[in-house]
Image (tube, rainbow, N blue to C red; front, side, top):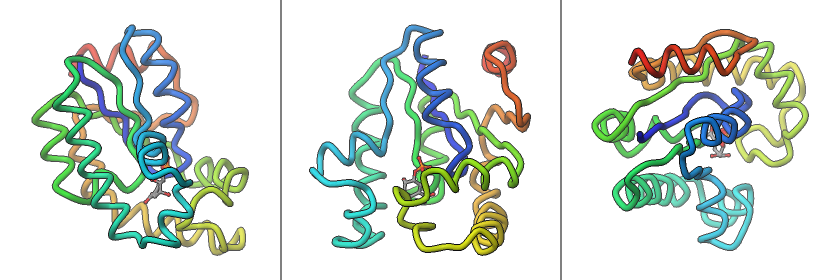
Length: 168
Ligand code: S3P
């Protein structure tokens, strides 16, 4: 099985990615972590020193490399991955895409805890974070909603994933 877990920052991709990889006995890749390892610097530094365009190019390349060089996996994408480099078409052609889509208040609550790590929201106040998340999510929705599986519960369970993934 080739599973791609996607969704906005703070949607729970890393947490659920690890849980699901263990549940389905799949090799687990966190796209951001693979990029950080390859570049030898944190995502925020890549953005600040080399620019977002460079990061998006790398993201598209690493996604393709991992997908084509492994028979089975769970890949946790970055929040923006589906929106660049024709990634949705690519992922849908090569595996199952799962969109983790909790409500914006849940996302914002989580984002406040690790804001410093995320270059797009690093300097935002709480009010700005809410407005930013609503706007960015609306922009990204057309990409995310091309997913084969959509999970919009704020409280997700492994059983929910299992049922939806097996039926997709
Ligand atoms: C981004 C999300 C981040 C990371 C980068 C850009 C985005 O990943 O790839 O900071 O554009 O939404 P997470 O969704 O894992 O935070």
